[in-house]
Length: 418
Image (cartoon, rainbow, N blue to C red; front, side):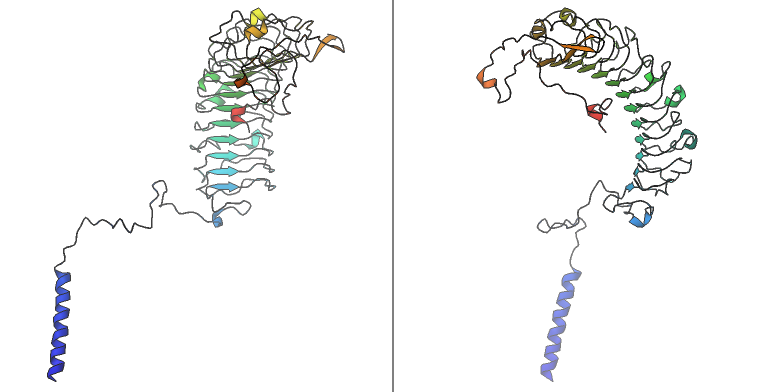
């Protein structure tokens, strides 16, 4: 009995000692985790944990909303005739290649987070596109309405837009009020419409961020008025423009490419294209007879299918500057009325030129002729600069295979190909 009492007393003493250890422990308020055992959960500063991922159950049954891309809704090529219900969290909506004929005012009433809408390749008409349907989409930056049946430029578009595609429609007029507020648009594509007279007054100049303007394949008889100084790419192929005002390009110092093939231009003032950044100039299929100044930045020049009988190189290059040589590498002059090749002075003025394509020249109605092109010796290159490619130096005067633009390439500048 005494033995049991001693054992109980010993256990009681041990319990009291352990309790006193915890009672006397001072907790540190500034506790820091042991670096040897870091946290397994890492906080992503760019993720909004207040907004849970929405499941595919929120997606319209006609569409597809991948769980890995919860902000995108794919509804293209599903024979839709109307716009389905769009969840509020969707930012990119793809409805191209359907049979949608109209866009009611309530189509995007809950989808105010939309940044991109693609409604191309449908059957939308202007009278079925309700005014103000896009107005409340204050985050919308890209709107694709190409390949539809629009007769008018959409009105009351949000000023957040950056890219607007309206090509391949039936638009014939553009009202200045329709462009109000589009100050952030960088690309405007209106190719393949029925526009006869575009951008009167200073409506276009207010689009101060516009970099690319496509108006190819329309019925324009004059140049679009007051283009903004920000413009870099201008596409006016396949119109009926016969005259370019002499000071038209004076303020467009950022122009990189101008395409005006298949018009009725008869004359270019000598210094019209004296622009510091111009790299591509296409004036093919016009009625030009007289050469003009070539800026030092120009690399590709297209003059085929005009009425040149002689090309005066001294007009194109008035003086030679070895420290700042011309960058021209390629010229097309086929389908003109040239009786002799270009002067050899061209190779001094344009030391980087690789080829001049002469092709066939016009001789008379229905008759063409080939020019006799003399060969000129190449300047020897240092062996360390030679490549394994063809032996064509910068002074090569022969003809090489020229690059034809593929169908549909006109108007699709490289930086914004789509």
